[in-house]
Length: 496
Image (cartoon, rainbow, N blue to C red; front, side):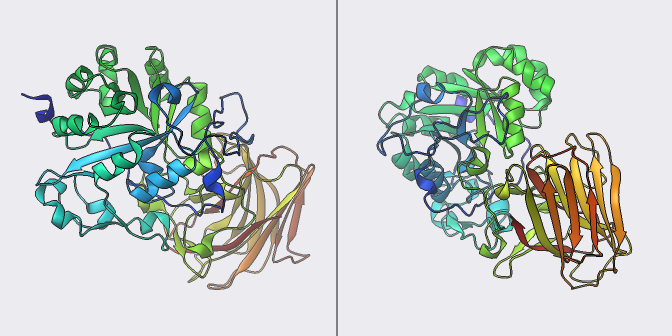
């Protein structure tokens, strides 16, 4: 059996993608300085904001690995642009990415295209299997990521692999993976047609697949990634590859075991700054990043939300990406509304507005139940978190902070919560008028060195204060914990 006939063992798939409202001029920001270590606070700028390199610079594998950590744009940084499209790759490279990750499938007539899944269900809502149709038919479909990226995201064409390689193979590092597991020969022939190809291509595959033999014979570096079910074979499989990989959901113990092998370890897919810090502390060398502008702090911190643009700003994400679009709040273009329709404790990170100013600041937002106000539940803002690890109302977490909430019965309350606590400690509360369905309420939170003040609609009688100085972190979340399916909406989020 030829290497390109060996079925590829699949990995668990996470349905996420993305787009960001990138500030003007961001294209000149380079990633050379994005080399944070586990010892540096997340809030410290981690990039050099200068176009220090020639636009004709060529990045090789050796140069990529010369910094720690190094960064690879996962699917072109899919939290920010439609995944595996020329638009995504171009934007990632314009921000200074030295490496991109490209997934490959072949059509029935042998045309190699860039796409993660072997079918089009998740990106075009078509169940067609790529291997079952010719390119002439597949090319009529588009990559449509509006459910994740926002309604203003434009569907993009499926790119031909050759077009992507013609654009980037001579100048950047490309991590390339055969998703069908049957195209090794065709891929190696195409890769070999580019100058100095062994300095620019890294072959990516599950650690249990065998294509690495044919690839290594051509002189290419290989990266074998480990899913949880493969960890029992770590010692025997790790010898096959130049670089090793792990999922971001892997435990600290498993990642430490892989790092201990002594080869560069790359972890995918990284969406939050706290992920970057955790992995750096564990000794991970490479960050395969799905949220490059935010994780590397390449865009200016916003003072107001971007909801009215219809595009998700870099860093604005739900509390987990591992459940895909299921938990992604909807953005209503033009109205500037973010709608949370999922029941239970939900939180939305306003990473585009973090880190908050040092010292004193005020967070304000309009919020409402747009339909019927439920019998129980809360809506509010969690703030003071040291980093962007998830913070959900009523759910114990690993980070500390405060949450200011308006209850369905009108109670306005402020809580302090330590790691591992569910509800936290009540610091202050006041009874206000029960909110009405469809009516906006403004919640304002003023933070100073020795004071936290929360107000509803700027009313003097609807104001609570606490001298608690415990937490002064610079991240915040929009939160709700309605027990039923009553939707919640947020608008006009500001930091002053």
